[in-house]
Length: 134
Image (cartoon, rainbow, N blue to C red):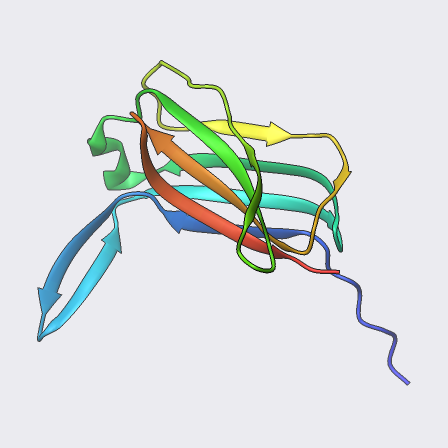
C-alpha cells in the first residue's frame, strides 16, 4: 500500500499587473509586460499562519516607470462570495517596482478565499486569490 499523500495547506500564485492587448486572426490576446503580483498563503485548512504578497518586474516591465502611491490589501471572502474582512495596507508614496507586504500573525479563517489586491494611485491593478478549504 502506498504512503498517504501529504496534506497541502500552502499556496502560491502570480498574476500579471500590466498587459498589452492585441488581435491576430480574429483572436484577442493579452500579453504580460513583465510585472506580476505574487501572493503566498501559508497554513493548513482554515488555519492561516502567514500571508504575503509583492510585485516583481523584469524585462519590459521596467519601462513602465514603477508604481506610485501603492498599497496591497488582503481581502477575505466566505463561500457565498461575501467579503468578511478587508485588511487595508498602508499607502507607500515612493515610486518603486518591487513592493512587498506580509501578515505574520496566525489566525483561523472562514472557508472561502483569500485575495491579495494591488493598488497604485487608487486604482486596482491586480488581484490574486487562493481558496481556503476545511
